[in-house]
Image (cartoon, rainbow, N blue to C red; front, side, top):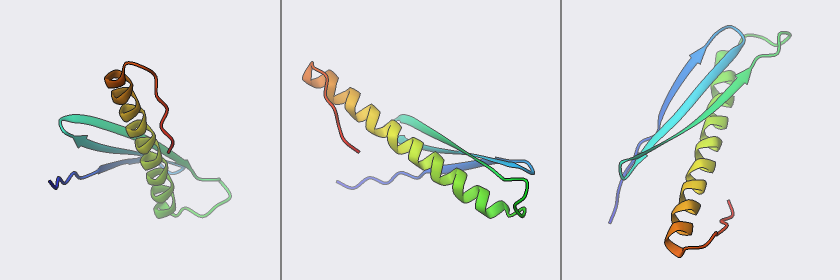
Length: 86
């Protein structure tokens, strides 16, 4: 069996901040992670760097939330607490 899901990235930016959200739907459940990047005032205004950092942080947050969801599902099925490692 092969299934495909797409991750949707959205950005909100101002001069000094970039916020990113990464969302994925897996078997009807939506998971969302967020990330933020802040430009140091002494650095050049390079929006691509802010988008890259905010995206990386959003994807990392999303990954942690997916592991948490899997842990909860296994714990419920097993009837006992379990711990998964990233």
